[in-house]
Amino acid sequence: MIDNNAQMRLRKLPGVDRLLQMPETAVLLTTYGRTLTVEALRHTLEDTRTGLLQGQVTATSAALNASVPGPTRLVQAAADWLENLLTPSLRPVINATGVIVHTNLGRAPLSQAARQAIDAAARGYSNLEYDLAAGKRGSRHAHATQLLPRLTGAESSMVVNNNAAAVLLMLTALCHGRQVIISRGQLVEIGGGFRIPDVLAQSGATLVEVGTTNRTHLRDYARAINEQTAAILVTHHSNYKIVGFTNEPSLAELAELAHTRQLPLLFDQGSGALLDTSPFGLDPEPTVPGGIQAGCDLVAFSGDKLLGGPQAGILVGRADLIARCQQHPLARAVRADKLCLAGLSATLTHYVQEEALTAVPVWRMISMSVIEVTAVAQEWLAHLDAHGIAAELVDGESTVGGGSLPGTSLPTRLVSLATTNPDALAARLRAEAIPVIGRIQDGRYLLDPRTVLPEQVDDLWQSLVNCARTEN
Ligand SMILES: *Cc1c(COP(=O)(O)O)cnc(C)c1O
Image (cartoon, rainbow, N blue to C red):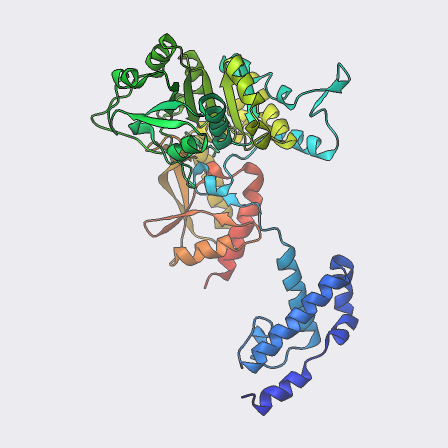
């Protein structure tokens, strides 16, 4: 039943034509065009009508206690609707979680040089598949690959879309229809449903599991080798640790075994660490050059974990095996795009020039001492204090993340914001124009300066000040 009151109110609502005449609508028409603007006005009117009929306070009429919103108010609601529609869903956020390679937050932030290289490649044409010296068709595999052998000690290399693709391509091209031997302790699920046994099945290779969850010996591998065997696969644990009574043969031992039986040793290294993590107080992460040096025939790794570049999957190793991967039809389906190749080349250049610790954000964060973090945290504290926002410094830990170095962390200094309701504060900070993602621990809302990019500090402060104003 529609009561008379509601009917009367509905009649007071202006029509779309009237709203289109409003001076405020002119801006919308120039910004969004007629079709979208009309849709927004219709939507707003419909929404308001429904709200009035149900006697509810709708978003449109929120402040008006269910009285009929005027035309200005309606146009404003339409403008909000349009802005919301056209705000990209993928947006920059401020990572104050202290997790350096945060998979949910887009993994590695890129260096300035990498961003410039991507911009240059995006802007116009490039010699992506053009040989400038010869003046004819070239190969996209020429890009980024001139630096990878130098950095890893491998003979040859190729770049694909991501490491999952690199592993799939390597297994499909080299092991399809044959057997691959892997330790039961390495049947990993990386996250997002990426499971090594599933990838093996996808590649058309048959999985031969050896050893036990905690202990696998060289002789277990040796016994499993037969004329159907195509390769031995080693997968880096990445995101978990087996502690206690454990054993795994070293890569060098496995390489020797594989080679005496004329088999390749394939290594899914995962993180793409080119540098040793132990000088920074972290556990030693297996490195890509370490894998090649140990005798692995192919090593697969990500471009956007510890390498600190764009999303990519990289294969390095023996030239004949790389050639087989390049020639496989799947290579086309998983190829890297020009933006990735441009960003990756620039990132690799930092390693060649031995400036990765300062130029590659991921490594700058890893190598930041607690003294440096404290200095930043104190600066934030002074700024917050000047705006009447109560906060204090507390000790804590940052982690590398990205499915690498589980169970090890970097000491850090956190900014703890005074709040009676950390969940509500977290929600408000996530709703800011540039959302801030911190962490809640023991009832505190914490920000870790280690993972906040220097160029985002002003935005962070702005968001904190905005939220402090609306607290209470
Ligand atoms: C992360 C990871 C993968 C998947 O790499 P993506 O770049 O996410 O596709 C595969 N294997 C290992 C061991 C990893 O750590």
